[in-house]
Image 1 (cartoon, rainbow, N blue to C red):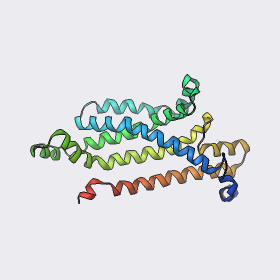
Image 2: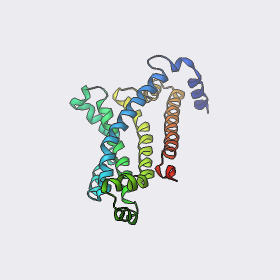
Image 3: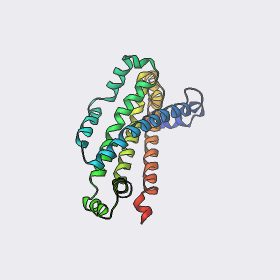
Length: 222
């Protein structure tokens, strides 16, 4: 209980939010890692998954390959990349590790969403004279949208939580608050850092739920 009340006091102290080591600076660094990693992951995974799902070929192989990223611990990947020449390029190892971690849920959910579209609906659209591109854009993609958004939401929350490991490589982010707390043996600071990460993940979850509902093409058609 003392740790919880101490964490509240730590978060309520204005000095802990200011400066280069303050919460606002660490939050900006955390959002940078997460935003760049998710953007790159989406550019890699979504076009490939949607195309494979539309064609119905090679998806199982792509998913199995991408799932290798789940089998290898992110921290291990980060340490190995830091020891390579890439470690000389600042935050590149961290971003690569986060991309490898974010690709599997994006790829899997998008592919499964496309393949679970009712084939009779696709055949009906084809019978109406729609081209392959029209079927993809006006039939398959709207119906796959919920699973695509689920994958994006899952990847976002996981990346936010995993980005705390950037502190292990000497990078920034909210993880630095936690590691600094461990170094100082300051349990309230450790708890405060964990609360900040959890709050950010929860906020992202709520944001994507609202965005998924607002931009759902099937809802707008209805």
